Length: 347
Image (cartoon, rainbow, N blue to C red; front, side, top):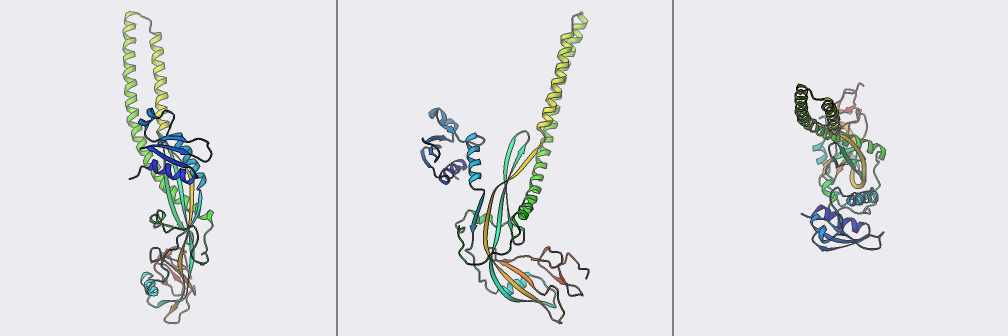
């Protein structure tokens, strides 16, 4: 497996239009567009004595932080297309009938099928955990902007060769929820995950705090007992004990400060920010259907839109006409209103 720092170095320099030359393992000469002379970079601290003028690129180094910040600033938003999909599935009507559960007296008549590009937005959030140590973690989350639902099947395509910068087909774009609304949904979902992680880190910090506090209290208790013993012996000899009592007071203050510092460092604080955003447009089949009752009952709504995702070759959960929740099953009440099993229309 390639070293992640070496991979980042070569990809970053290439992305900014620079040149990189490997002199020896983990030693590189890098020429960036905004500098006049090459810069020697080493990834192994043991190589620094042989290259005293080189800069060390390692996790936590200022150089890496600067390059990461610059990389984020360059690539915060991108647009791609993933349209290498099969849009003429065999026996589509039968497949949809199997995947959507309807009442026995109801059938769906497909009146029109149309492919449209559905926008998927992938948000990369960076969480920074402040506590005993500063740690950072990335939390990607992908949303289907037509339904405003989270999807989990895009990761395998991000590193593949199926993404393109231009669209292949002249299909129109499907309606998409506003980006601000999608961002709020993504942030709320990531916040729940980060909150759980922060809680777990806080629990671990409290456990360590209890052990460290007990150990520190024992240490100061031992030192205090030693001083008290010296005070008692000095008093028995009739010696001056003012300086020893002053040392006890100093020791007590020092203990309070150290314990407060331990407690403060044990508090986990989190900062969350959006660092990158990628929009991927993927064709999807939109099926405009009409529900039909065998007993000529009037149904509401009179039409339903279903979608079939060729990327995963499955029918998407449709939107309940009554409560708007995703569902794969519909029922009908005595008034002819279609609804999901989770809700019951009042009329």
